[in-house]
Image (cartoon, rainbow, N blue to C red):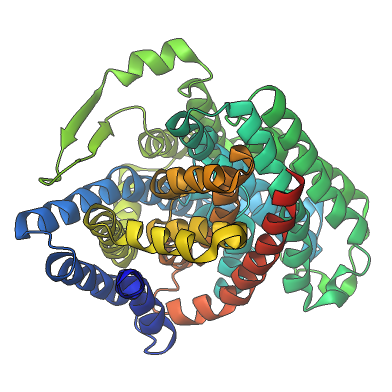
Length: 508
């Protein structure tokens, strides 16, 4: 019977993949179908009553709206407003003044700047904003989405000031610094691999590395070493932020010295004259985002503690063992990104009409994304409360035995795929990984970190990530195309992760 429950538990996920790839449905429609299927299975197989099923769905929808949809709307609004004011043209000119080589521009924006945005804000900003910037530079929308999805996976376990790893450590009573260092150690080969893949995708294969191999390797090395040092001696909170900033500085400095290859040179029309004030105005929204998120993080305890009081806790689910949802009304990334957009817009001389028109256009642009987010999180909550996720995990643990480490990253990836969140994957499956480590006599830090390792693959494949990417570039309706493009990379990561997990478990 456990195998039957395993298969039935997978049905909402299998349906989502089938609807996107085979039927080529848009993500909102496919995700809503998964939600309905999870409700039906939850009620008729796992015996949720109607109130339990609906309240679980409602909890997921509310969590989607605040903070995830909020931060996505804020991030896209910031980008769209910067386009309206002309600030994006200045940023474009700045980027092309560093280098006109397409491969290096993609590396700087998708990998380095994307990593920084993930480390500071998370919740899709690291996909949306860099993808939008790449399109502004003249890159094809689906390409921009693809490279940003590849780049976004490995920073996710340390996203939004380290929340996924910190949460996982606290949940299981593990030491933050030890878990951070082992997670980074597992991610290290993939942190080095990501820039290589990004350059290859941009350059049309392995030939794309010609002339920039050294810079590409330096971009990955300068990311992973600082991340490991900070994670080991300080903790998860600033690991990716420091790593991405170091990588950004190294990549920019090396790119400035590299003569662009004519085969990969981006066309620059009407060179803009740049001065300090103009550049400062253009970057003002993003500078504000950095300052606000840093000052209100746990790294500045007095401010963080003061703002924490402006929050509400409610219980939505009406069944056994309900979770408590906390709504932070002020200290949440979406609020600070909105405020940053308003301040940056005023600095850039945006009018009230500009703010109004851009905001309305952003809401219209993101309507399909909102439906997707609510459906996916509603489905995830129904699967969690009903026991579907537990059925999947327990069957896998029982059937694999000593070979469990091979599938441990897949379980972490499953959580990130369903929820679009590294934090949620850890909450769902962290205890499963810890329990498996005890059963096998393995190092619990190694096994629990494998969950975060799998998150890096699941995040790039998640329908939520795909929807955010497409909404940022106006590519709604191309979900199946983008999933087909990103799937080989996610699959490659998972296979390599399984090999690393199994042999690494022997060493640890």
